[in-house]
Each structure stands twice: as C-alpha cells, then as structure tokens.
Image (cartoon, rainbow, N blue to C red):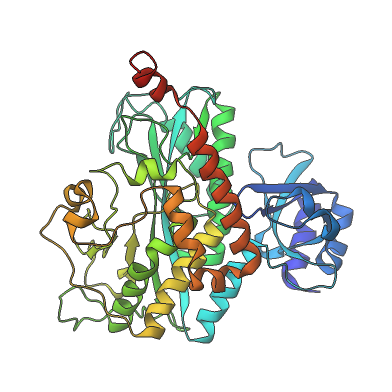
Length: 445
C-alpha cells in the first residue's frame, strides 16, 4: 500500500475521524466540498468519488456532468476547529473524467501541468504570498473593528487574538507561518505563508482563506478577502514572492556577479521580462473581479505601471533586498495580485509568463529606482511613458481573450469560460446604476 494512503487510513482510525471532506475549487477559486465516510476513503483513492460537475461553475454542462474526485493523500489534515470527538478530516482532490483523464477545467490540474513543464526544464517553482484581508463586524456592511495601522501592537489592534488563533489553527494543519501583523488599513491584517513549492502553496492559500473565515465566525465577526471593500482605505493585496531552484535546491535567480548589483542571474532577468511582458494579459487571472480594479486604480497604493526595481515600492515588480547576499533569499515580488484570485491559476500564469521570458530570451527594461510611479500612474499611460495594467475588468478581459499564451496555459475550456463569464460580469456592472450616480446626478439633471 502507498505509505501516504496508509498514513491517512491509520490517522483516521487513531484520531476518531468520522467525516472526511473532499476539497476542490471551481474555476473562479470558490472552495467546493462534499463529505464521505471513512469506510469509503480507501476505495476513493483507487476509483475516485463521483459527483455532478454541472453544479460547479466552469466545469461541465449537464449532458457531460459526471466527474470523479480523487483525494490527494499528501494533503490529509484533521480540521482543528472541529470537535476532537467524531473529528473531521480533509483532503484536496484532483478532478478526472469517467475515462480517468485529468479534467481540463480543474484549476489544480492547470497548475500541476505548468509545474511539471518547469520541472522538465530543470526548474522547481517556489512561491511565498503575502495575503491581506479585513475583519468587519458582519457581512452586511464594512464596519471595521479597530482604527489601527501598519504593525500596530496596541489596544487599537482588536484582532490580535483572531490572528493568533488563526495562526495556531494553520500550524496545526501543517502550514508554517512567517509573519502576522496589522496592515495599513483599519481592521486590515496580513498573514504570510512560508515559502514552498507552488502546488503545496496553492492548497495552503485555499486552506488559509477558509481558516481565517472560520476563526472569524468563532469570534462573532466576518473576514473578507474583497480587494477593495473601503473607499477611503487601502485595498487588500496578495503580493507573490517567487523564484526558481534546481533539483538540488540551488536558487537559480542568484548571481553574486550581477553587474546591476542586484545579485540577479540572467535567468532571473529573463523571467522578470516575461512577467512584465505578459502581466497585462494575465491580469484577469490575478485580478478577476470588477472590484479588483478599484484597488489597482487606487493611486498611491498599488503599482499599475509595468516596471521593476529593487528598492522602489511603486513598481509592479520588485527585488526584495532584506538579505541581499544570501542565495536562498534571492527572489522577485509581484505586487499586483489580490487575494480574491484563484491561487492555482494565478501561480500557473505567473510561472508561464516567467518561463516564456526565459524561452524567448527577453531582457527587461532598465529598473526604475528614482521615480514615484504612483504619481506617473495617476497621469495615465501617455504621461508615464510606461505600459499600464488594465484599468478595469473590461480592458482586462479583452487583453486576456486575445492572449495566445493564456489560451495555451489554461486550455480552451477554462480560457473560453473566463472570457464569457467575465464579459458578462463587466456588462452587468456597466448597466448597474450606483448610489454614487444617483447622489451626483439625480437632483441636478
């Protein structure tokens, strides 16, 4: 018997697990789940568990709805917020069709396919996201719980206990944490997950978002990963640190002889150039909602100019320099994604863009260290002299629709679904009459 499967079966028995939840996401990154009894698990590893794919957004039409969920034994964990008696476990699943083939609409499969492509080229893809979110009084209105700011550790930080309980729950589920702190906005927080391989990290991000919400509910409040919930406060981002290492764990982004003095290898610079070239095309994946662009157009807060630097935090991509002479610390940080993105697809398109930069031998423009690009972005693309990210969902979906790379990476199934769904979302938004419009125009026009 597979040792991971054997561990799961023994743990189910020793920990009094009476329900096992099988987790997966739809195309947009919404968690889906159904529970099975422990007696079904051994067969599930071999034959999968059937479910109706037509009920999952972006999966299959009713006439092709039969799907199978195959649990990944390496992802088994007991849920720490559930009772220890009659405990509940969980595993992430890979989705297959009845003939046993990987389902092309499964986001986890998309990332696995890209990770395998990188591995074939000799690269292992590691990521470390900084995931921000807000606590609100409830889900009905964005009423904050405190007036704290960045790194506050005072009575202003009402949610210290929530963060503590969240971190403890995550660690009990085998997810190591690097940092947790109050963010810049009132009642805004950040928990940073420790660097690891992209597939494990995507599972961890999905777990993280659920744990944050579950612990918030236990405390009688609501946690939101909405990119821009407050007009007069910073939006929530998911900065993604990333690097490529070889099979021996050597960081391929590091080169102490870099003429720029950034300690970046030529490979890293090709990767950076790929990210910058394709960022406008994959923006629909990293920033997938109408509300995402309220954050991206929040001048002075979020980089929108396609640019890079080391110390300049107004650039889209930066090279963190906390430990500049340590090879293992060398990485790049993409600052545009938000936490509402599907992490499987987000990591997949970033990796694809970086690999394209390597394959195409791209070279990035000169880094911009001495210019505030927040001010340039506010003036628009013509004045900044730089390419810009899309300013709204409508622009993003058309760039994405025309992208051959995105179609190749995501497959026709997911690509066409997202184009159709996001065009419809944008049109619905354009037709909506907002309170702002009524207040501004109704009495004067």
